[in-house]
Amino acid sequence: MEEYKSKIIELGTSVDEMSQLGMLILFSNDAPSELRDYCIIHDNKQLLRDLKVNQKIYLGKDQYTISAIGNTALQQWQELGHVTLRFDGELTPQLPGTVHLNNKLKGIPKIGEFIKVEQEKS
Picture 1 (cartoon, rainbow, N blue to C red):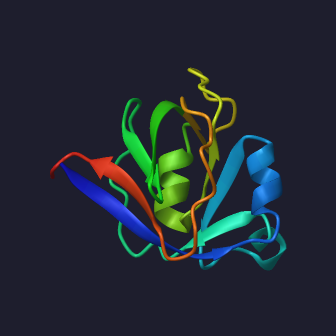
Picture 2: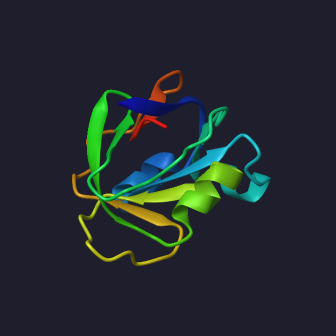
């Protein structure tokens, strides 16, 4: 099993607020200034090849499992390093750019930690 790996380089001032709503927003370092406060900014130097239901995502030391994927989530992550993670266990995506996870949010990852996604070998 290979993995996508991206280093967290900045936490917006409102990330804690977003986490209390059961979501985290990821964005590459190119995030628009008006959105940065709400985002976990990561270096996004590696191409995410796929997203699938039941795949594991790691935010720092915490593991989550994908329960549903919006139809534009992979493309947005690949092109912009942007995706909204919802920690609600939904089996049907609520918005096109959202990835739903079936675990409750365990904590906000820290600067210097990594976002990892298990990937099938190419």
